[in-house]
Length: 471
Length: 75
Image (cartoon, rainbow over all chains, first blue to last red; front, top):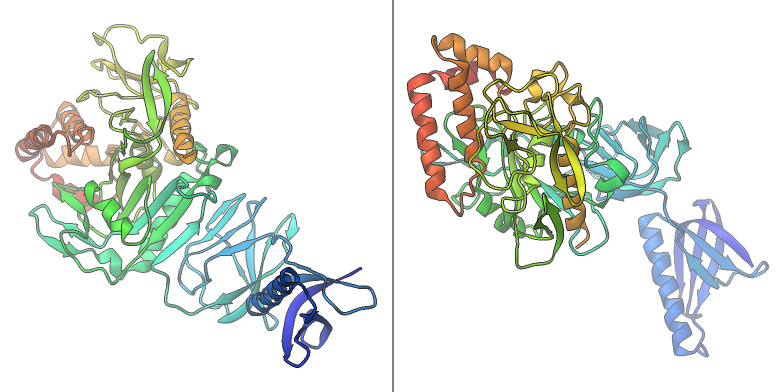
């Protein structure tokens, strides 16, 4: 048997013979004509299969995907038809000015997206490079509209090309940046361009971010770079062992939403804080057929630019994964009643704020809060990463906590900052003792991007996210 | 909660003569505590923290907002 590999350039339906002629080849002037013939004597199951091949050829013609047609060495009748696995996959349509993401495997730093059509080749460096994902924050407008071939070029070589249809717009309202695990409820992070703001006085006003899509998209890119170990960021709590390959990541930018009490998803908090209105988030996402573990609201306020986060409220009535903390039984809930959330200005472009706020948001009010370490006091509750001595002069215990049977040491020195003499609180030992904990005051170091989580937070966050991702 | 930068803390003290690090620390403790209170379960407790926080702002850091506007986003 022979195999003919190529793009379906043309299809002709021969009514009289009940056959379909497929012209397969690298270009319209160099093709091999192969046929699928539905014979009158074919059993029903064979007719069904042949019609399936015809539909597949039709889809391949429209989509531009190469097919592999198997036929006799000296014959033209297709006996088997397949589309082999593609090395890369465009996640949604490429649209000028919109996000664009490509999934695949083994992407390296320095990878470039290459769009080619009609002898024109446009290179687009992605803003986020993960082994499984490339994300462009804003697709350049110089890529020709229409059918392009897309491949990924890196030091390791070039992938096979896939056809994509580039559009000049409009940008998508809901943009899936990564579909995550192929399951009903993958671990999901949703970025939302905030529609409206509730002011300190209680009035509702439109959020200017909805009229500034480029600023919103730049904010999302900064958050992704912060969270997924890009550039100088070294923290890999979300990326080690490809954890983030399991995440569904979605962006919602809907300029048609009108300002109302239900769409004011953030509110000002005197004098400079923006906070999410956490109870409104899940209903808002439902309108877009999305649900989230963590919602990151990007807003356009220029007066309330201090970021904040609310912990998740896990659903205690649904499945969970048990763990122990200092011998006490707790659970990582698989689902939530209220997602974790953060309010961050879209103009964010420095520091580790997105990753810091994500640390809060991914943890839970009841089953372990990952809290700020830069203050001493506490209102109580189950804090994963902060404990207290009875007296400020007491020594810091060598062991901080036992989490799931493993002892975690205390940070005796609070990295280079030192514990103030009057503090009662102390923290888990750092992964990198040379820099403040991400949950501490990361501004107190020359380059905040080099900060790490402490060892306990690191393991706790990964376990918790993995538990949710396992649902 | 995004921490305050040393630059912001210094600017706060410059525009509020007599303001101490201990007072800023107390303000920060209240801010952090606020976000550790489940607003759906303990709204009264959260309101009380907000009341204390705003009292501290009003009496010791009345020009806080002005500093924020001057220094911009980085807290």
